[in-house]
Length: 75
Image (cartoon, rainbow, N blue to C red):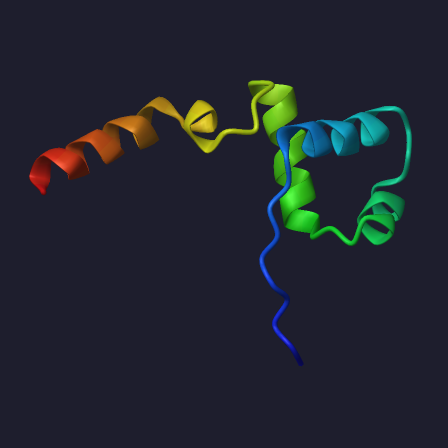
């Protein structure tokens, strides 16, 4: 089995996929049609609902941010 090359998606593409889902298109159809991974798609939907941003730094909890800052200090 060949390992699939990592792809990156624009925020606009992610928003379009979430919009399709929110407008009633079945999740399975979106995943198949656009050849997307389920975990990535589910993360996009969650991020869109919670913060509206797809950037990881905008979706961290306060504890995660604090932990990262403490690790930087320790280094």
